Image 1 (spheres, rainbow, N blue to C red):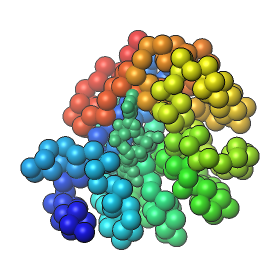
Image 2: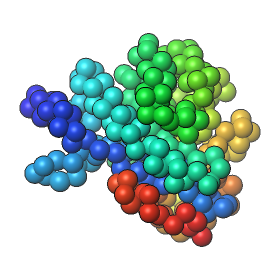
Image 3: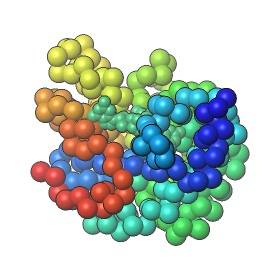
Image 4: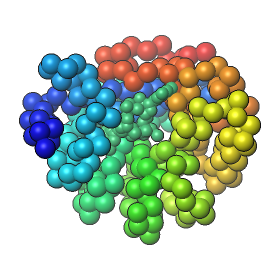
Length: 257
Ligand code: G
Ligand code: G
Ligand code: MN
Ligand code: NA
């Protein structure tokens, strides 16, 4: 596959860069976290979104691991600058997406700790996002790995929540700190009453389990109000900010409201 060859070369040329999208605390209006999102800074085509290359790369575990290790290094090399800028907000977290291939590497936690040490990043500032579907591939193993991540000081978030087509019962056993409500639910509120009920129950379930709930893909004021009335903890979406490069993320006004 030509794309795979191109990606392999682009990794060596350090063309993959992280963008950052702020997560806003609904009540305080403060930026309480950033999600790192990979972009390909292509010499001819400009900034490419992950949808144009990740689905292909994910089918090649070796290259996917190479790519994710490269982007993780790029994120960690920028992490101190970000953390020192945002540290005035207590509980600040930098989120990093982990593919299921990466999540299932036996050396995951020790590799992450080694990288944190190398870049002088305290694990408490990092949160790893795992999709519901990658957690459900082998639930008992996922429980063990998540527990090890937490024991090492990292936070764990369940990404794209609600899209895994599974029974909800697994969530009671999975050691995570955060649930990210998938944008497909957010898109339908407040117009679609039935989606509203589902969102209400997911938020209430998260809170009863002691988890933080982040709503993704919030674009409209009426979505924000609706989620706020349901006591959502955090908001991520174009309503506030699009993903942006480091230089912009380090220049934001830290109080939004
Ligand atoms: O901006 P958006 O187009 O950034 O991202 C699309 C998808 O790509 C999201 O589902 C996101 O989880 C995934 N993604 C973005 N960055 C990374 C990354 O560094 N690793 C993995 N595994 N997925 C990522
Ligand atoms: O990892 P995850 O699937 O959660 O990545 C978040 C994805 O959602 C990224 O592709 C990001 O660019 C995208 N995104 C974030 N906020 C919004 C939004 O308000 N609207 C839309 N359409 N996409 C968003
Ligand atoms: Mn994510
Ligand atoms: Na998501």
